[in-house]
Amino acid sequence: MQILNSCKEAIQTCLTTKSFAFAHLYSDEKPMDMHIHDCYEIYYSISGGKQFLIDNRFYNIFPGDIFFINQYESHHLTQIDSQIHERIVFSIYPDYIKALSTNATDLDACFHNRDKNSNHKISLIPEEQKRFLYYVHRLSDIQGYGADLLEQAAFLELMVFLNKRFQKNYTIDTEKDISRHQQVDQILSYINQHIGEEFSLDRLSSHFYLSNSYLCRIFKNATGTTINKYVTAKRITLAKALLTDGYSVTETCERCGFNDYSNFLKSFTKATGVSPKKYSKFSIS
Image (cartoon, rainbow, N blue to C red; front, side, top):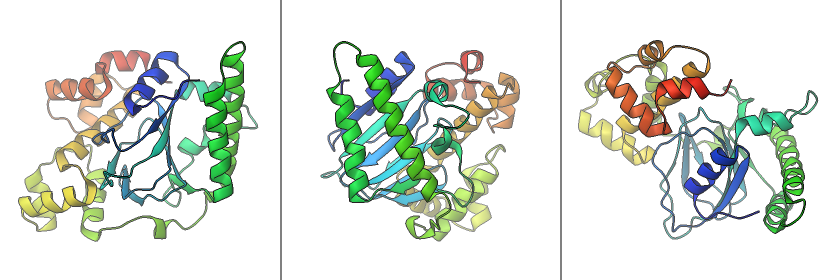
């Protein structure tokens, strides 16, 4: 199986083949802005980094950390060391992994079984890191007759290993692993609570008794992205979930906080590559 060298290429390959793809990335690929995509992501850090923002949670990144991100969670790498940034990223088509699951073994669990006390992140010990990389090398070496079956078998073993490891992490206290900035945490919480409403920077500034410029500055310094980009990404995430649940395009536009249909259409199409109507028609059930 080919190891790709671009995260965007891995995503596109995953969506085209409706299976999975992975990339080995270095500091020469610029991290994407706050984004969402229609595939699951497994992010494995080799070199470590500074910070990961997933929805409204900050995570410090250390060598051997793995993050599980589903298709409804906006995410963005922040404050990355431009000299050292090595990682392996898997893009997985949701229906593919669901089809491989059984009643006894839910391979989808690591992407969805989270509540307020759970975590997107697990930290592998050295022996577990070696095992993860063993599966990566095994996948990359497969070719020739029977490659499709052997790739699927290796992928199954990898996902069973990761889900078992994820379950061990499920009830741990994660507060020490989440980097916190009190003001920005409060801002993120407020945005998420009111994401379906129409609100402006002035309203946000007034609520926190901060000037617009100061609010924008501390948010950008902490998250690596702007308030506007974060809000748009969160609204698109909500819109995808609503369309998947069967809401009409008009209802979705209203419920996810866009006050103008043309703005919703433009933002959604730019983020997902398809119009809301087409996404609704072909969305994952």
